[in-house]
Length: 141
Length: 141
Length: 141
Length: 141
Image 1 (cartoon, each protein chain N blue to C red):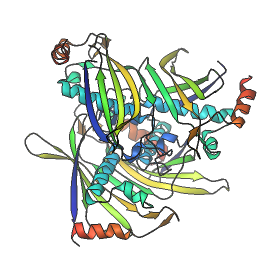
Image 2: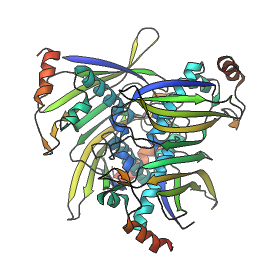
Image 3: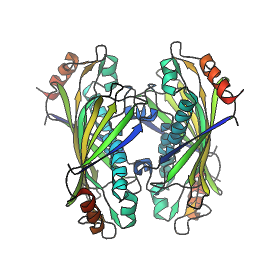
Image 4: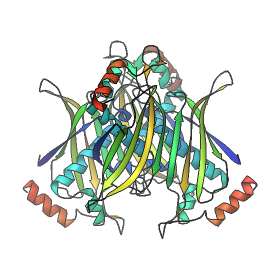
């Protein structure tokens, strides 16, 4: 693992369903929340990537539901980068809840993979050099 | 009232919240569902409007919650056009459930107002002539 | 105006639509975000209200869209309480963006009204006494 | 493959994001749309399952994004059942668009796995007998 970044947030009422728990689709929004702040923290906010003419559409994603989470829970989304992006940028995620006894409950785990696409040509491309440069510096590779 | 159009749909699980009912924000998506099919039925699908260089952002909207609706309910969204669009296009909505006894339960009522904006100039504009022409024919004014 | 409370948040990618701006329905989620933290800050988190056997379903709500907001914008939702709750609890909202020049751009304004319902009887009720007590202390009435 | 069922639907505006395409999280809602109607068509609507005291929370799910889909596209979600449910009920999905030339464009593929949980005990259980009976009749096993 090269890097990880934590973002805390609170479960909103509108994220729950009639089962009384967070709806399964919402975890993929949490992944996005986590990835967004990780990229900002590394120095290349996604907004800037698009402004530089690159979009990063998802290739695939997966989520495993381990324990339910509830309205008003304070959750942490931990985003992992395990390797330098090559043709794809792979992210991995843990969603967990810190309990009062100082333990944590693992809620969900997942991953996704993003491509690099040149906005002008609409063709896949390699990671932009400026991003690789930052990653090499920050992730020490 | 010049025109009304009904669209039936079923409440999805992901539209409910932990109160066991459809979340309040979802009714505005129902309004969009209703308006979209009304415009298609009148002969100017919204997609075509954008393709002709006009976007129609919302100016305001309102919803009154009268009776809850539940997962798997079959609801009808009835979209009303009460007047020809001038600077704005006003829509009004009833959401109701047909009951087994041939009665209907009114779930929600609302309205919204949409502007016409020229995509190129990003400036407000009058309703496009081709749309007014269709509306005059269909709504008999 | 008796009370107001600010909550900052960032616009997520999944909150935008193909017009490139935050979708109209999302503002009602922002209202919920604002109201939730306001109630927590006043000392009666909504979760606790439900745990005490009261639910607060929406009666109606309105939003006026003044200026678009974009992906990655840092917005503030300001929640206002203008009066003590009687049969309903009325909230009012401003959504705005702080600009670099120290000015603010008003994005949207709205309001909603919530009822008090006894979970056991499913009947409307007056605001619970413990809540009125807190409000009287905090809002100085 | 034991069974498959098709459900057609139209992409709504609120399902798109600023990339101009359907947001990645929405495909998991499409999976739910497909699964729901498949279960209804087989004779055990999910609503009835819950009424009989069983909930079916997700264990995991995956989506592979093959080709983008756009506002107003008419898509088909095809739900596959490849095997009789044992401890889990596994579903597989194809999302595709029928093109004018009578060809189809594959948009996304995915799967998910659902557990059976006894509402009263909150414990995992085997598939209810009445469901297995229906499945054996319908899927010819």
